[in-house]
Length: 324
Image (cartoon, rainbow, N blue to C red; front, side):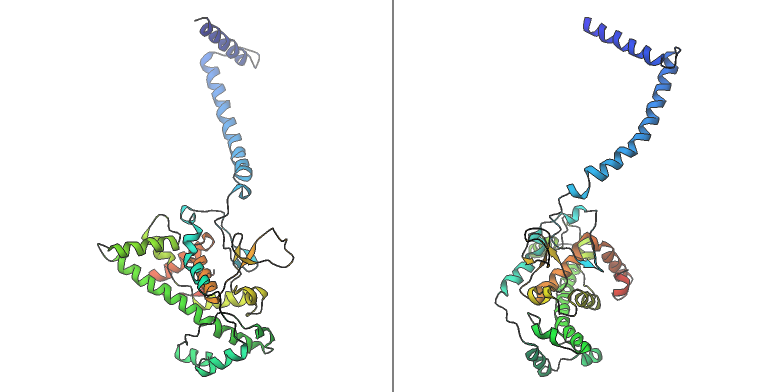
């Protein structure tokens, strides 16, 4: 009981001192209102400063775990990364890329054909860009490596056409795979009941496209094609029309980065520091990884939204609209 009386007396004494702060006593109710107003004003003045400090120092990117970002694509010389990582991007890397790793492992002994051999192959199969533009048909010629002699083709237009002939069937094949998956997805969506195999397939695709919420609408937006012209343009830009070291040594058509996987170190980089450019055993794996990146990474959310809007309006996918 003595302790309680002591605390009460102590509080009264401190309250009196506060009320006498300006030299004269203030009545209890008025004083408490005055002190409350001062406290509220101070809170709203200091709170933004504290929040801003927390955002800059405590929750800055330096303290965030970015290990999930194993693939980052470089556009126009600037790294496209999103500061916001939604719950749908916190996926398991192995689930996301398992089919790409499998494709890579199947082709460990792939053979690099010479430029002259490839040119003869194109002639034997009547595969040329002039007929493609006219008939809209592409020969299914799937090469595993770019020819090392592509750098020696002096005629610029010939080298560009040669590069397009190599990567075009690969891009179309991956787009066709996505198109078939998309058709199956719509078939499942339109059913009232799904079979065990269909549910198993859906779970597999949720993992591949990083949709942890298992939301069908999100999967529908992510599971879609990348315009062929956009893929060719980015591959050409990244590789210098197939002449870069990363393209010739590692089948890296799109300059994707990795901090944990196998890759090629940029020249001048420290041996054990920084990123590497992802390396693939076959060109097809590079194309698939590129499309998976655009269809899942948060940096390309606006691209996917624009693509979904075109789909909803029944319009064809326009590369110029998607890259805005």
